[in-house]
Length: 230
Image 1 (tube, rainbow, N blue to C red):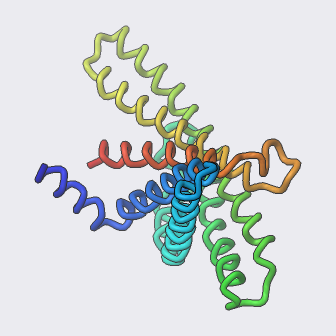
Image 2: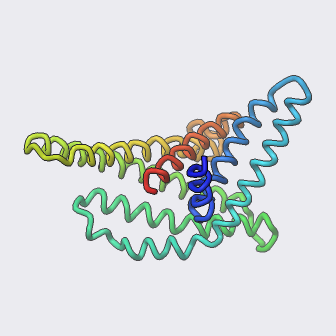
């Protein structure tokens, strides 16, 4: 019990860990709130509406915290550069494009937030749409990158089996990690498409609980990956 508490404290003390906890609570509340708000009895409906309000506040909290992510993202993009250390050219250029999308995402979201807060004179809808497009682009590139890495790891695993190498276990862990990354990104991408303008694929067709479900799945995967890295 004490070990679990200590682990939770360590996660909450780190910015990334705390963000993942808040994200999980945000989408989990949206999932449960979306289900309960559809109930006929007033008590369940009111509880559902309260959970949806709680989810909205947590989402706003994460948006404000991301105001300070630009510099860390810029430092990561600068350290990665053009990915000259990557052995595979496809992985390298997909990663570079994903970094560009991520770098542009933050200022677009900041402007949208500032417009909603009446700090700048701008139409927030356009900036929210642009940030969603950049987020979706980053997710799609991340999926393509993970699929490419999975293909390379599969080839490497075959070579290890032929050579009798003992690194098969490590390769399987890497493949599991990339597979989790694909599943989480697909769940997030489904929500990103939902928030696109009506008429684009399934945009606007998800009920509230479905958005919460997809977000909860990706958030739990993020926590699993965080625990694996710990």
